[in-house]
Image 1 (cartoon, helix red, strand yellow):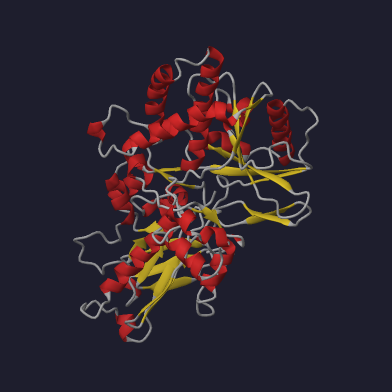
Image 2: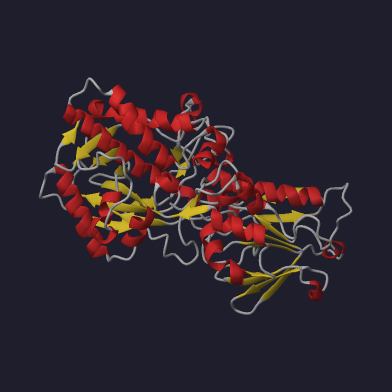
Length: 506
């Protein structure tokens, strides 16, 4: 437990401290009744009117908003969007083809990257045979750009690391993506206001969760904190990021996690996606531009990795989204970068990052005078409480691994007290992993599991409840974006649930 609540949630100030933006989760993916995050934000009155329109709520964009693009090439040329649309359309169609795959026997490709690198050149040769050579080559370079953008969506080093069947299992929600004007912090504050005073402890890192602790009295679980405090509980819900579990599982649980759960933790993918915010004195993009794509003209062979990270890491950043100006003379872009290149970026000084961004922008615009006013970036990989951003379906993982992730301890068949340790968070959702709503739904799932356990038809009443003091503990290590779910439960045989939310790190 640390000083903040709510997942990968954090914000920074730009433009003389008056432009506020989030360095973690910022999008509600799918503004529809199916999305519990959207419904909460709507019910709390936190959304702009346009997010609530029937037209926006009915759009099926597959988490690919119809943003107005600007394209720039590494030769310093601004490319016409109509000229580049064929590449983006083909890329999206290829990904839609993948969504029809339900098992490995149906495909010869193990990964998304393998599939794109194999199929894109073939389809390009057929689709673009009437275009001149220069245009065909530019469009193929654009496929590399789109692969890098997709790496950010999946927080992966390469789309070659993303399992094709696992990717196809992901489910999008209908509705245009939207944001919270007050940020996810506003939603967290609303949720926290409904919690009884003193329900949440801050600055209290957890050292170890002792379960199957038969010698501790009526409670089977004891949470040991870094300061030596020990909290007895009947149940613990663990919602920490998969990256943290990968790194600290050996010391975080006593006895250790069962082999099947441990193997699944290691097999599932968890990577880094960082944001680099760049403010300019004046815009060098079109007034209606919403996203900027960067195309390297020497990447005709589809690729999403660089050959020398220390020298070429900046090439992995293939897009900027344009932040709506919050005030006059505020011109801010958000650059996206994922993978090992993103992790390397975190090791550089602010001055070094600024120098690389300046050179990048000058190269692609052909304007040697453009200079950023200020730059700020996230560093999720080196954040000790997150160790990265969010999860993806890694090559070699399966639906069974997600089942293993969400299975409570002790495992079924044990004679010990059931549901001692439960697991929630985005990495435990079978088809909404990596999302805020997936994290929230996983929290509801575990709350429902406990509620069913103590339903009026159940005889499983803990001794502490009979004594008038049901002991429940929700373990969350630093809610920041991509982190996961925090919630509190009160069992008086009424369904009182205060939902917590993972605010995906970005």
